[in-house]
Structures are given as C-alpha cells and as structure tokens.
Image (tube, rainbow, N blue to C red):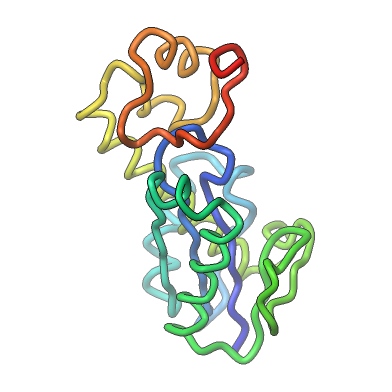
Length: 178
C-alpha cells in the first residue's frame, strides 16, 4: 500500500504545520496539487478523499515549531503518519525525506502521484479551516484571508499588534526583526 505525504503551512508566520498521509482505497478523479485547485474544489475533494482512503492528519503548533525547529516537526509528523498507517511504500512531496528510512522524496509528487495529491488537499483544507476558525479569536490579523502567510497585510498587522500566541517567534520577518 502506497502512502502519499504532503504538508501545508511550512512557510507561514503563524499557525500550525499540517502534514497529511493518504493511502487511497480506490482512484479519485480530479486530484492535483492543492494549490492548483480552487477552494471549492478542494473542499469537495476533501470529503471524497476521507471517504475513500486511510489517512492521518498531524498538526504541529507554532510553539512546538519554535522549540524543535521546522525540519524536526515535519519528521515527527511523518513518523506519526507511518506508525498509524503502516504503508508498504511512502512517497512525499519535495526534495528530502528528512532522514526517515523508507520514505522516498519526489519533487512535484503532488502533481504526479494521486496519493500525494490527496495528502496535499487534506493538509491544506485542514489548515485553512483551522486558520479561518482562529481568525475569530484574532480578527486583527486577517488570518481568514491570508491563512498566516507573510502577506503585506499580515506583516503590517504584526507591526501594529505584535505577534500573537499562534505566531512563530523563531521565524525572521523582514522589516520587523532587523
């Protein structure tokens, strides 16, 4: 059984890292890299993927990322997914397997391999939903719109209000941390 793994939120200034692993029970039409799909299409596929796969979604909060670093947070998430799903083969999107034996890194796997595309969608939708929910607690940052990425609006909000408790303090922000 092939498990595809992908993440969402690696480069964000706020919010969790979300890593998903998917083993498809049957083929699903319309899978692609989550960034190439509309929000509506991702939302539709999210439920279809969950109904037609074995999957695991791992959230790592920003405080943990600040404490152990992004690479170790990703590696820990991958190990949790493999432990839960017990795949015979694992492919993840990107150019590194984070030192985990048996995990094959494939550049652009999220556009080439259905299981990785499905993982990309589960990770992105899960993270986006979280950021929309957390926006209610921190409306001044606009998380619902930019999902924690380093947009001009987000950086301006950090400048005005400082970092919240879901921001990544270990991430350098140009124009603020100089």
